[in-house]
Length: 142
Image (cartoon, rainbow, N blue to C red; front, side):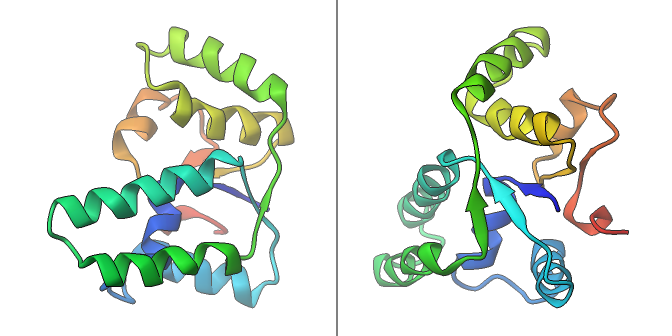
């Protein structure tokens, strides 16, 4: 059972993502294994914001982003954070070069639940290189 962050989930809903992307292959593996997927509630806002950013940057149309956004509620993701995760996220952000707190909420949830954090965010993985349970999508469930 992994925790996934928005960098992974955006690929699950965003328009025009190639089916060969590691995040898409991960979703297929998770679905085939009937594996529960966790994330903090922040995931919904995080992915929504990424879709809006894609519109502003001309990556996709507003209509395509609207369709992608409507998929969020259908994803097989359980939202499972607790208030103490924010406290831990603050501690982690301060310890790891003031990395954004919103990224560290995913880390705190995974740490508390003793699970892998799957992220496509290479900067986050680099900041937490000592945490062997913070992994790229292509390395999950292997």
